[in-house]
Length: 276
Image 1: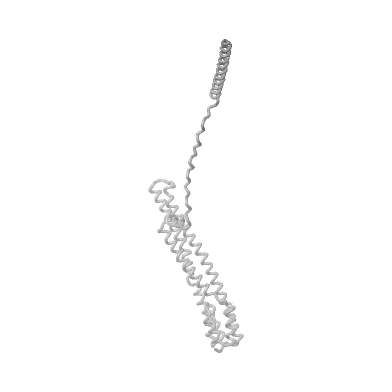
Image 2: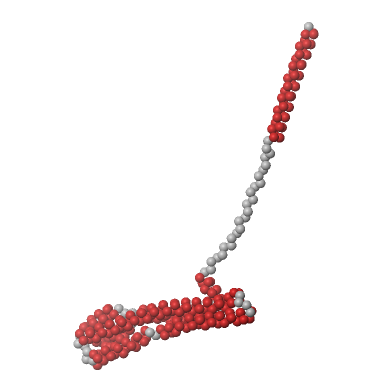
């Protein structure tokens, strides 16, 4: 009986030992396979972070204003030659603006003035008409006043007085135009003078250096061109104002002539010539 139990125990121990060995072999096999798989797998390579290059900072050039550009060109052209041209522009514009204001104030509604004079002649006679013309602004009203003051001397004296005083008023309207025309001619001449002086300086630089390189003659030629451009611009600007003033004066003169003829017709119509 003891032998039987001993045999059973021996069989059980052997079976347990064989199972444990089988488990150990399976574990070893799995470990080896895992190691082999890990060894044969591709290594994971970490990619470096992309290097972001700093974009070059573009320098933003601030655009120069028109005033700054003109100032720079004025200095580059030479103060000694650009200053007289600038003076011509300032004085010419001052006279032109004064004349424009004066001529606009001298403009009169001749139709309304003639209607008022006719009503005054019909209601109050010559003295009433004089009062109307004296209280009206402009050269046309002044001519009417001078004509009415010669009523007692006849129609011929009235016409002569109107013509003579019309010439005086025309001279007043054209006052200052001669100075504008002077500056129109003088500004380009000053610019051309600066051009000649600049070219002389360029040739002097060539003679001193004994070479005709662009760097040597650039300064003199630049002065020459800038003074010429400045003089021409001033002449063009003042010429525009001059032509406007001339056209305005012509319009006023035509109004004076037409109104004077109408005034004589009114005096004849009301039979006021020869009595005050």
